View (cartoon, rainbow, N blue to C red):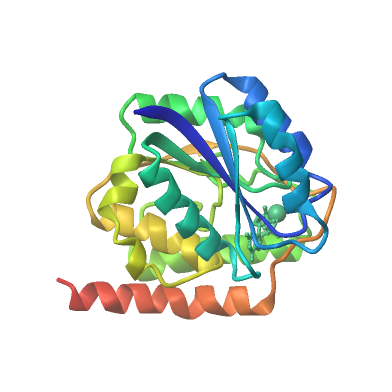
Length: 239
Ligand SMILES: Nc1nc2c(ncn2[C@@H]2O[C@H](COP(=O)(O)OP(=O)(O)O)[C@@H](O)[C@H]2O)c(=O)[nH]1
Ligand SMILES: [Mg+2]
């Protein structure tokens, strides 16, 4: 079984993607990266394509025809990862909000037996740098809201920096995952927890992006609000 795959979903990340790939692949020879690009108009996909010869066998590009949200991009990558026999699979943003140097520390948790390791902003206070106050409050309220409705014992349920043992992704019915934004992040953690896997939060410092634009929008927030209620109700019927 191959070792560790880092999945990076991209939409218009031409200013970030090369640097993050180079930094990740320099950390450990055993790391592989797959970029799932939704045909970014800024040429992110062709930039990655051009780097592939330099990192032959360690860097992969999966291109999707249109922008459909990061959830579907991740599901595509998870199916790809399962087919290619990776042991540990990471989710990570392209924009350096997640520090590549945290990957080996989080991977060490998986090696120690954790099933899902979450790069968490909220276990040692509030470790978010340069986000507007409104976004911090939104993210923190989302955390309390998720805890209240679902009981999920995680302080940062919308975190997008996550490492999974492959067994977790095998056990979750990927076809049943229905959300695409923050709700996607909540849904996967919730489903892993409900299946009895152990989740551990690893403290990280989250930096607001310096380059490129956030793709967050009102529909992502709305999806998270009703998504949490949906997950809770669905789990009542599944008992
Ligand atoms: N493939 C794909 N990637 C996306 C999409 N939306 C966001 N992303 C990527 O998901 C990551 C997080 O998105 P970002 O805009 O930084 O969200 P924020 O950090 O919540 O503001 C980045 O790497 C984005 O390029 C999408 O629709 N498709
Ligand atoms: Mg971001």
